[in-house]
Image 1 (cartoon, rainbow, N blue to C red):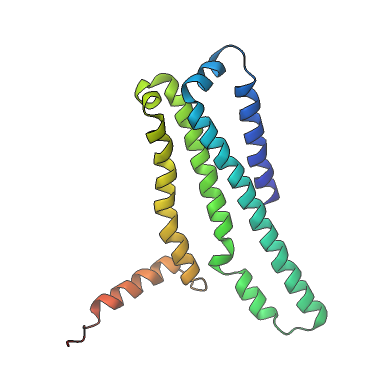
Image 2 (cartoon, helix red, strand yellow):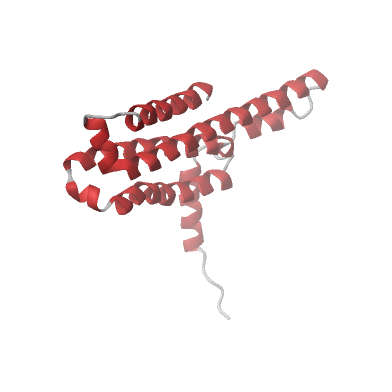
Length: 173
């Protein structure tokens, strides 16, 4: 997680340093035509770094709790191990990875805005599209991972539960 946080921060610094400090060439044109994509992508890259760091902190906390249980007695270790191995423990990682992917999509849109004038004209629409897509995909997925955190296959379990609900006869009043 530390390497991923550092990678995101390094990409953010590199992109902003090169593009904002450029005084001629393609990078100046890239900033002029795709500045919104670069700003949104850089913000998402920063959030990715923060969420990777948050995941790292959570894993360190679990490690500390498990170590304390081992040092005191063996009571409670099974609960801590089960919780640290649950799907819900890795939600920050999944959010961070989504931010990372969408940030790269935004940077790609900035590059495409150099060649495709329609993208440049509708920057606000095209900048929002990947973000909303990620929100629409992530929200139910993260909810399922939280709700069925201990299941072997949470998506499969969710679908099975939906099918069971449909088959249940409704009570008549």
